[in-house]
Image (cartoon, rainbow, N blue to C red; front, side, top):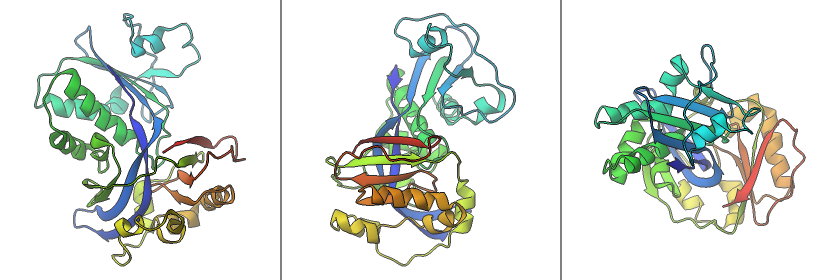
Amino acid sequence: MVVFPNAKVNLGLRVLRKRNDGFHDIETIMIPIGLYDVLEIIVAETENTKMYVSGIDIRTHGNHHDPPAIQKKENSLISGLAMGSESKSLFLSMLSGEDLEQNLVMKVYELLKKDFELPSVYIHLHKAIPVGAGLGGGSSDTAFAIKLFNELFELGLTDEKQMNYASVTGSDCAFFIRNTPAIATGRGEILSPLNLNLKDLFIYVVKPDFSVNTGYAYSLTKPSETGISLNDIVKMPFEDWKNNLKNDFEKPVFGIYPELSAIKDMLYSSGAVYAAMSGSGPAVFGIFKNLPEAIDFPSEYFQWTGKL
């Protein structure tokens, strides 16, 4: 069974206060976008669960091993990528050790196994959403894995129960269960549906070739509970968002990484009606009324455009 975990962007983000548990209370609006990974899970033919990754390399620990040969199954994305004749130049690896233990998809599999009798599985994750970008790729993979396990093994989990599992693994994971525009508060796990129609608009996403540590971004940001609620701001005319819909991470993070401010300026000069950094960055996006032409960013920058 195959699903397509999509990215998100934040329309504004307010850091309200630091909590006693070390996290921060925030207010943000999250919307899904059409940039996605590919996740396939099938029942394993061995006793051991294995996870393969391809696309963007998400490995960070230890030695990396090429995957052993696995029996080809018809219509299997896993075996197709692992064994297909066109896969020789495609990055593909089997996760092991700490990389496997720390992967959020594997964590949620182990979490569900505590409550349900799940068989061993083969998991293949093809990464296209940039890692460490503020686009929620890892959180989306996790939430879509929960939904896939629920359907594949007929677990009978309601949306609310799936969101509870998702919240254990990450602050913004729960958003991707329903995957519709929402106002997020608390650590980002408290979600309120938002009626926001952006379907005739276009988005242009840019990520430079570095990442911003979320904890570091929070350490640079001064919490403030003053200001207009984002829910009120997004009700303003779209053209007013530029001067009112702010991301509190931008000022301190742009001070460290001025190229992010330059990206935002280029998006505006190219016709964006609204532009902002997503989450703690470093991905920056612009929203356009018409399909934007390619912008002359450095070739090493990730760029993606689509319709909202």
